[in-house]
Image (cartoon, rainbow, N blue to C red; front, side, top):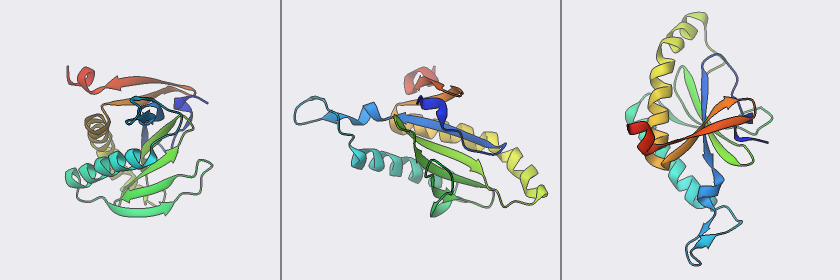
Length: 151
């Protein structure tokens, strides 16, 4: 499976992939290893989530499992959107998804806010992780680096 195979549902949804390879490094040995340092990944993801809550105070902790195939876990939510994480075999996915329990008027409001949220989340992910991948098609993605996005 490629990095681009996870895709949250809904018309207002986006996702960013963090490659597990960046978390396969043994500091003591000074080389790449096979085991993923999930503690370090979780620390970095928590840093990103705190930055999101600071930027958008309407997002609050919402630890709840999704009902999808990928075992999504919703981490933050507000009245319009959920932010969650899923395992994508080669990467961790952070996603923004419009809530599925909105009234039509709320859906219109969510549509107006979506691009601002998505743009800010992408920027926060780049600040925290340095490199993220974005979906380009069903099985592919491309890398974006912090320094490239700044120029």
